[in-house]
Amino acid sequence: MPASPSTARAINDRLALRLLQQDGPLTAGQLKTLTGLSRPTVADLVDRLQAAGLVRVVGESGSQRRGPNARLYGIVADRAHLAALDVRTDSVAVVVADLLGVTLAEATLPIRGDTPARPAVEQAVAAVERAARSAGTAPLHSVAIGAPGLIDPASGELRPTAGLPAWHRDLVKELQRRLPASVVVENETNLAAVAEHRTGAALDRDTFALLWLGHGIGAALMLDGALRRGASGGAGEIGFLPVPGTAGVPAAVNCEGGFHSLAGSAAVLGLAAAHGIEARGAGTHGPAGAEREPGAASAVRAALADGGPRGEAFLSELADRVALGAASVVAVLDPGCVVLAGEVGRAGGDDLAARVEERLARLSPLPTEVRAGALGGGAVLRGAVLAAREAAQDALFAPEGAL
Image 1 (cartoon, rainbow, N blue to C red):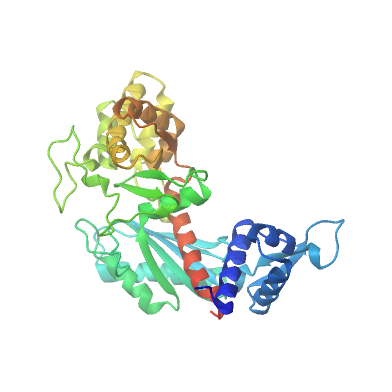
Image 2 (spheres, helix red, strand yellow; image 1 turned 90 degrees about the vertical axis):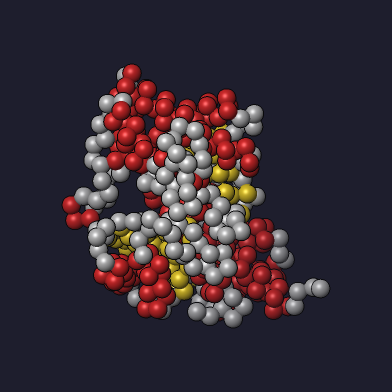
């Protein structure tokens, strides 16, 4: 059944707006080429989007051209603002951006492990509200939260998970209650994969697996350009993966004894100590909440700088450990590419990626490229900004074109 005229217009408008967000500003001629639409159809949609306050003329395409065909159209980026949160066990990082994803305000708030749930939630919500005020007067339209743990695929809610603070779930509910904005929550590793796919190390890959190497261990699966979350939202929980080399096996409520025990930050720090590698600057926050490099990442950088037998032995064993988990993912999915993300993946860079790739070639018959993540710990926030922008598009670019 063919689409109705109003539906066809809405589809064309969304396509044009996405192109303007990703590649703009653009002329009407460029929009015609990129969309495959006729010149009159493009002219109509440009007029429609301008009337809705979503697009405006931002310049001309060149000094030699004049007139309507040379006008450059761009998104009205300040029509609404977006907020992105990276929620960790001991901190919350906030970014407020415009509709093009440009950062307008940001803040990082440490939250002590012994802080009761209610004060922790209040502190986090206040940080979001301050950042939104600092960004300007545009309404806050969409909020995206990246958090560790499982997201229920049916309800979109953060499920209770052993070992994670209760205030995580309370924060989502409180933001939904207090903010005049839509609020979505996504697993942090999935958001990192979105960011690496759209702006980082996997720009040219529609199928890849991302391994998050940080305080916790996780994986995200991007297959044919789409995230795969699994039947219960738990795809990629490889911290629970049984692997050789640990003291036991994981349990449903505890990943100790799984891959987490080999490659989580505590395990990396223990390995560094065993090889005489000192992790300088360990810890999440410095004075006044300034972010410091996590200790595991610091240990990897120290080993790379060491250049001697101690550093070589540490990096070699770390690569062996990471390759064990990666090999299991590769054997099941054959993604062709694995991105080592998170603070440790970023710290190890191309050196660690090459070591893991070499070991994977020995463990698996499936050819797999291993790349270092380009965005480090900032990938979650970047992915959350992209998720908030997607949520805003679904409402702002609806046929009615209203906030």
